[in-house]
Image 1 (tube, rainbow, N blue to C red):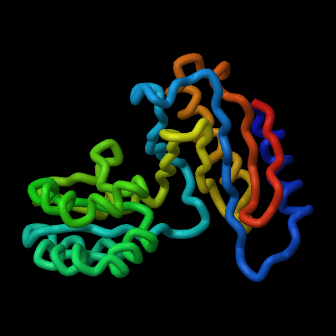
Image 2: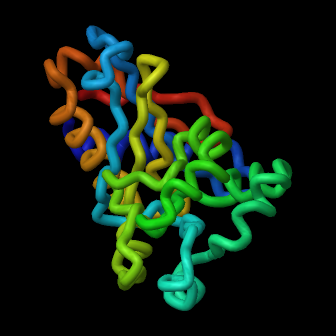
Length: 218
């Protein structure tokens, strides 16, 4: 993938997009082929560390016991203490709002069974359960700031039920260099995961939130 052509596509999308009353996001859409998503080993569920953020902070929630209550309260956007799990389990509206408002969830390892019982049904269907692959299941004594900072620059690329992965990659008010770098980083990570690399990619497109996609050359 030629970074100069990627930047040209970013510029074209910015120039041709109708002005909105909000700042649009860039979404990268990777269409796949020649893989069997019924095989777990061929599904995509990658947590890709980016060199740059995506133009807007993401909200992170922590499920904690007494050991991490103070630390999580200082670092995370929302902290749910273990004693409050039952309240969320009974209040489906509050639980759905919690799921929708946060990009990542961190959990203290020794209370994971309680997290799964209270939040698993809603977070699981959204692919947002605390994931060890992202480092989101932590020991009871942990400095959460490095994890919080890393998740701000982490893209979760998923293709489990459909032969396509769509991921938020940046915003239109970001520099072209940053958005292009994020695109290159995600595409390279996906290529490394696919069994036949380029042969498993049908096409790649970039779009703004309210705009039409433009294809990128691989």
